[in-house]
Image (cartoon, rainbow, N blue to C red; front, side, top):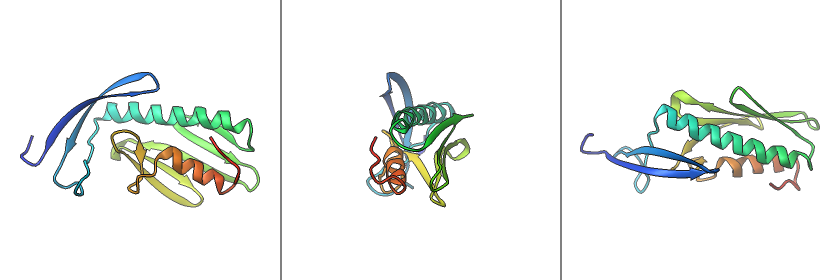
Length: 141
């Protein structure tokens, strides 16, 4: 490890699963933050858990609201009939991000140590709730 890097190991628990994470802090990260470098298996496990959890929560909520949720080949799709729209949530393994396409915009989420989040700190679940509320104002999950 070079002089500008610090290695940190932590055990995360999410949805009853224990994950061993190895992260690195680098000097290139903004002051006061840690740039997390996940291995491919770590990213895949965290992304799968995040998308599976989000899919479950949205599927349960879709019983009370007018949208459909589908998980296929690791990508989550949320479809609305009126107005017709589709949101797609998918992992992008080469860059270790979760990408969301919603409302003709693209969002890129990085693992921050506890959740996939935008640089603003907004988590994947928070962003999806906000995006759905633009179409269904009374939506809560």
